[in-house]
Image (cartoon, rainbow, N blue to C red):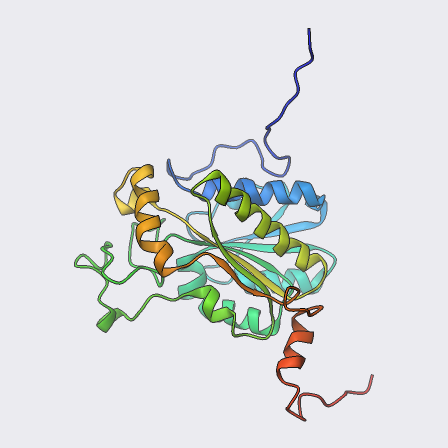
Length: 275
């Protein structure tokens, strides 16, 4: 009798624990992709993750690598401290849009501006999930939420924040890509982006972030299938998928080298400091 070969198994870095995510939520897919990348790069023993406040607040239970819990929005600051203390480690934060783009916006922008050599996995589902479905910084114009029952009014609430587009203007950033996980093809693309972000960090190229456009069937009040349809029809036109910055593809070794090139006409920037 022929020996059976396992073709698909749980990643070692993903612990055999039932998660707290709602049925149809894409957090579980992204958790698995992160764990697969950790396995493939062989970094579980020197990888440290930072869990946020939000739907993935209990991520410290799900990953086999070391994990730290951060106060709401402070994951980039915690990740910065971990990376600077142990630069040989691979450090990532896993954050939702409320955590990253609302209370944590200053932490996000300044960590990216400083070029902190960390990786951020950013889940954008256009709503506050864990706390009941309030309007988030990424909620779309006219989107109905618990705190915008008549739809987001951009006159009073402002416009949604496009995180990749905003961070792409900062010199400390080495790599930004926006992906989604609504099909096998896009799942493979998302995994490749996460792997590139971790690899760039291991090569000390600068700050890296992968944004995953996601769904929230529970708070959107939809079935998982309808949620994917709504995401494709509404979110993807507003948050187009693709690479928003890649300094290596632009021909540079790292974000710092790219920044010097952009500022080469400024004498102050090009002053050589003595060792």
